[in-house]
Image 1 (cartoon, each protein chain N blue to C red):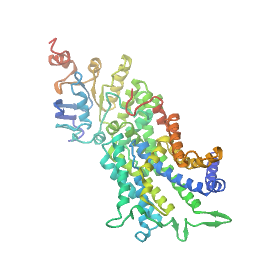
Image 2 (cartoon, rainbow over the protein chains, first blue to last red):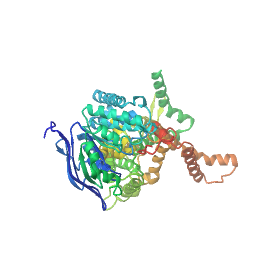
Image 3 (cartoon, rainbow over the protein chains, first blue to last red):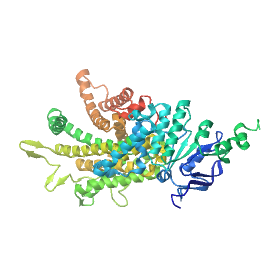
Image 4 (cartoon, rainbow over the protein chains, first blue to last red):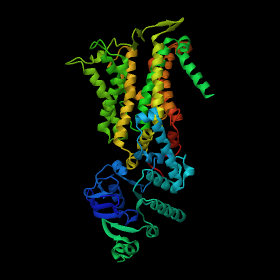
Length: 259
Length: 351
């Protein structure tokens, strides 16, 4: 398969069990190149588990997934990152005591090569690479709008800035697919609007987005297609407006009482 | 201005052993030599504990591996007398291999669990050295290995005194310069590693291993690299120690020595190269300085009330407690540790 293929990510019958609980139960989905794909569902539906499987943090118990034409399910997280899937975390996981700039520089690790000899001897190649890392990291901070915070330790940043920093760090790995786990959580309306613009810009730059989000307005405004998970199963997929009207989806969100 | 500072520091360091010799006596020059070895050990452990965040309580084992590698291949034990130019790199390499041997099975462990396994590893090495004299005598058991070759190039051996232009260059002086050069190299390597792609990856693993792996860092290889690099510093220090003492035995590599090195790292300022150097210097000098507790008692109180050796360790312990209370991030903390203790937080938990 070539990279001209319209399908970027194809998951087939992914399952993941934790003890007796089926966190993911035969989930299949397809993400196309260049789209913003939304993953929604009630709390505990398995969205984050799916993210963890797709980024290699959990091996799937059954099923497999192809990324960019190659089978990547079961690979270690760092290998999946090298293939081009980057992510952010629902409960922000920055390198708390490193500066914002250093956080993004860590993201460049997977695209750079210098080893111990390069670090100690600092030859021309190693120096050039190090400059490149720093320059790119700074550009990315600027891109997400927090260049002024470059020298601050990550833990000291405002909440919204921490979310942006996580995005910048993920972008530093040069992903083809950027997976965002509730990027708008804890943001106010203005910040959400800014975030939506940032995500649009990232997509315009050629990166496909996979988005877990609770904010319906954001999902409807931003996503080309959405999939709905409930109790580890996919119950709907398609155009956001159609999915929103789907009685099965309404039932899942509002429970049996109103149905 | 900067050059002037460098020249002044260099002149100071060159004059130091001779000045100390005149003012405090030759025993103190020896103490400075030992302190420099501890600088090497502290910096090695700092890579593992300070940078990569892997708590190692058996670090002295790598010192032992380096010391015995040197001792076995440069002594009458097997009648081998290899040059230190081969043996010091070899010691670094062998210790590095042992570092990987310790690291590989403990990759999944963190914090206290890792600490317990490394503690066991340290003891295993010591007990092996103690018992590898039967059925074949390799290490000579508890008696240790004697008559180890000094560092020597041709006829010039460091265990002899030389007189140059009226200056007496005793063995403690010549070893001082060798150790100083090694410590300087270790400082240089540490600083460069810290501010590099590798160093950032180690610190990222320390801060949040899971996030680091999701960002594309091969945490397994980098943790093994940290163990190997840290251990190789210990291996070099061990070789230098063996040649300096001319004698090694398992009792030089006890649990307490591992803790001492860890204390130097933590107390000096974990993760900060300057802090570790300071910690190593202070914690080597302090117990020696406290030997004066006996004579001073006699002088001031007319009689020795508390056994000097007891009092010495008592005061040492007290000093450790006080230092940790007053400066919890270490005497000279890294900027990151300062941030952490100034309300930052737990690595990995941001909120």
